[in-house]
Structures are given as C-alpha cells and as structure tokens.
Image (cartoon, rainbow, N blue to C red; front, side, top):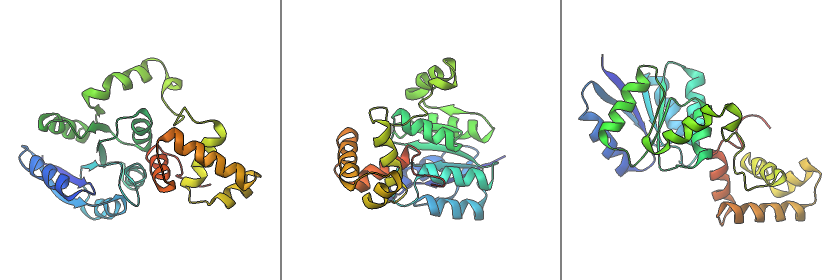
Length: 217
C-alpha cells in the first residue's frame, strides 16, 4: 500500500526539498503541496491524503489551527508536524490539536520516512530531540504537560495575549476585561518583552502557534 502525503509549508525551497526527499522513499508518494493552513484544509478535502506533513509557523491560518480543522474533518488523516519550533508550548499545542507526530526540520530523510510510515499506521511518533520531554510529561501524569503556554507571563498578561490573538484591539480588550486602555497597553508591552518580540503581529503569531486565540471567545 502506498502512503499518500500532502506537504504543507510556506517556503517554496523547503517544499521542493521535502517533495524530492519523499519521492525517493519507497511506498510513499506526494499527492499535493499547500502553502498555508487554509490551502492545506482545502487540498486535504480534495485529495484525501493518508498523512499531512505540516509546518506550524505560517502566515494566515497556522499549522496548529489547520491540524485541528483537518482532524475534525477527517480523523483518518494523520498529521505529522515538521517544523523549526522546538519549544514546549508549540509541541503541546500541536499534539493537543491532534497531530500524530512531531519532527524538527533538522530531521534526516530516514527519520522522516519512519515517522510518515509510523503515523500512517496509526502510531504516535516524535523526533529524537523532543522524545525525552514528551516521555517526561506522560510519565509524570497529564498535569505535567505544558498545558499553560508561556509560563513567564502572568495570568492577566496571558489573558490579554489570548484576546489579542483573537483579533481584539487594546480598546476592545479593555472593555472586555473592565480595564483601562493604559493598563492593557502596559500588559501588551510586558508580553512583548517576555516573548522577545517587537510587534503585535509577532506576539500574535507566537500565541496562535502555542494554541492561544483559537476557538470561540
């Protein structure tokens, strides 16, 4: 049986490299390529791949949101995250969204091939670089997994970030939380500093990659 793979990544050169690598694998074929999360959902609906190789950090609909949508639409489609993001929040968000595997982009062809076959057969596969962390979460119990993203943030800062990730302006956040706009601006500034970002869009991108700002308000 041939494993049908959809490659999702916004970088053309990386897509080309992955396509070439997968085409050289025995029993695996690339049936399509998508440039972002929305494109991935559309193509998965039309192509019905066995496995989606999913980048996480993409413009528009990110890989976490796309994974959640794909799994909801067809649980038979396995998602294998293939990303540069190696922080606990991104790993947790992808797995909670329904990804069956998580690899870093530095993975070799043999590791990617094993992971594709593994998730296609219904298994859970994580790369060598993160396997120890995932084992630790499960061995310590579910409460040990990083369900709370960005632990350096206060509860209020995380709440503000989550609302910003939903697209709310500072004024709208202030009204929703019964705060002054100045207080919201201060919280946003603190979030920028703690996340190491300089713009709201960068903070929102990190938040959504970690699973904040998804679902209903």
